Image (cartoon, rainbow, N blue to C red; front, side, top):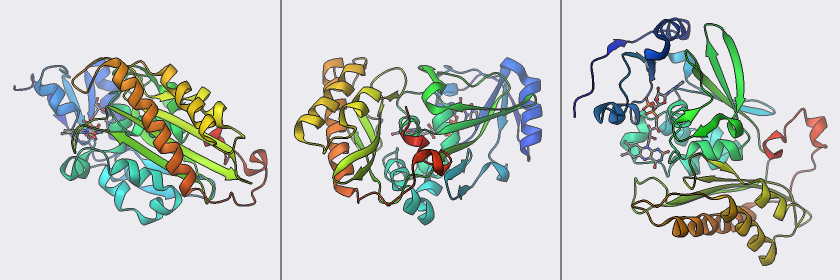
Length: 307
Ligand SMILES: Cc1cc2nc3c(=O)[nH]c(=O)nc-3n(C[C@H](O)[C@H](O)[C@H](O)COP(=O)(O)OP(=O)(O)OC[C@H]3O[C@@H](n4cnc5c(N)ncnc54)[C@H](O)[C@@H]3O)c2cc1C
């Protein structure tokens, strides 16, 4: 189908984009990579009257790795996340997740900001960002505010993004060196959205789980931070019974709908299977935690693990 009529703007700066977005009010919609918005416009599921294309705004791109946090510009593409060696070294789960999104064509244009700002429960980055305890930076002509990824998602395609707001960057605490990680995604074929997926980050010390974080993708209207599952493994040596308990806790919060990927029962079980596989792989990849000071002394470096 052909989209409904719209006015098209292509600002060169963030300030100009914010002005256009503010002036457009409820009629305005950001166009980033276009891989979610344009299909929705063609189906007339979205009919924005004012399109603000931010693809030319260089200041919205980039990956910055600091001593205690990572900051990624909203217009950084999934491809750019994959090819960044420094990002893969500091936080390898980003590359692992991005490689499981769609196909190279989509990843060349699809952006981190579009993936997390879209509100589609099938998107993979929102669950990962909940796992990493990311903060989304939202800017408008009225100012800047920060919203935690774990509070951002309100329902399918409903987020905390307000009228006139642009998601400009994503920030999250740098995971400690030697952390274990895994993003496990079950899909019907290459390029598909998840039947169920799980993100796990683990820090082991003395053979026990010192800290952990688990989140689920596409098994509810929103991504889910699996706090009860985390509580089940905290302080354990990840014996089979501990993993069973975490899997059961993750399955208990899953609320998938039945769709072409399977029944609600099947997708719930697959969420558990993904958590089990991700936990086991994260544990196998995990080195002993480096001798790090207590979290409060690190200026929030371990914020990714707090619930
Ligand atoms: C064939 C195919 C397969 C796919 N498979 C997967 C998959 O397996 N996993 C997955 O996660 N995704 C998948 N996608 C979606 C793809 O990753 C999208 O590119 C992504 O979800 C949206 O990013 P975008 O940059 O294209 O955003 P757009 O489509 O441009 O925008 C999406 C939405 O976010 C809003 N938005 C975008 N950027 C901002 C911003 N900076 N601030 C505020 N609002 C913003 C837009 O207004 C729009 O509502 C697939 C897409 C296709 C076409």
